[in-house]
Length: 344
Image (cartoon, rainbow, N blue to C red; front, side, top):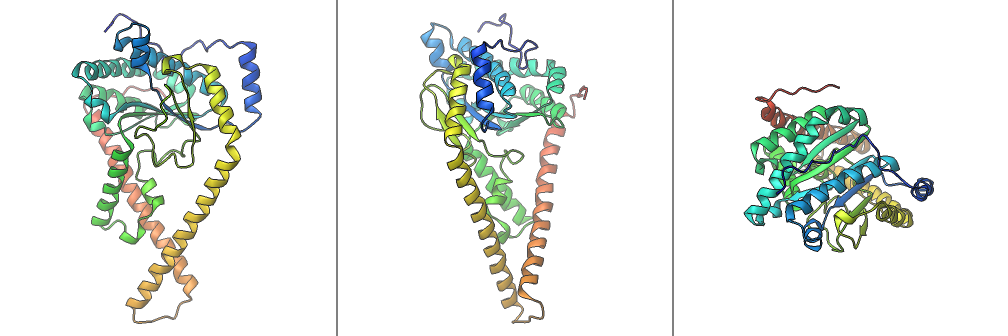
């Protein structure tokens, strides 16, 4: 691995030069619906290295350079949230040399990110790291935690970095959180729903992606945001990630715009169905409580349902507050021996 090669900035001071054709396309696309949240499977770094007779490490570095460039394009287009699949838990199964290389590259990336705190605050970017962070080396974990802590109050844009992540692991962890909530008496078993499970996922602070892009020509999601992509427009691009261009991004957004109405209708119908199922659940729970009270009534049924719904919402708020506290404590424990110097 070439350690003398400079690591490209996450947020370059000089914006990418665009031709008049790029500016025209940007203007045209902005006249229609532009996705607010784009998820990216950055696939093809190793094949790019092989294609260009490079070492794998150089291919991964080229991939990071492309990420920094794409983030700039997204900001320019008005895309306010980007989620990238940086490192899968499955990647730990690769050769030791390649895993070590990827961990070293991560050290360089996140060390550079910490050096760019001013740029993070200037652009108002909130950095979030999603995944099983307990699998990471301590030094990388500290850098990630500091980046998250320093930027947590930024609201202009969000960058979610999925690191040591798979969707199946995320969903499994979410189910464990629900089981813990029931065990501790914070919620009831009857409170559990798809909506509550969503709030237990690592992406709970984000809306589901509007558009997901996968490069390299592969047409599968590879265990990435499986739950969140139910109503996401998928764009599979036949180009290796380091070769991904602004024109490819334009084409993906145009694909999203062509399918916008159908996806929006499906999302709205799903929202209505979720609300209906919740009302039915509340009704069944109230009727069950009435049976246990030996038919004692005296209160209007609709009033009981409204009261039950409010109590359920209180339990859920208390449960989610507990989960937020656990997450905050996790990061605080990591940073306890590493002072955070951050200008907001």
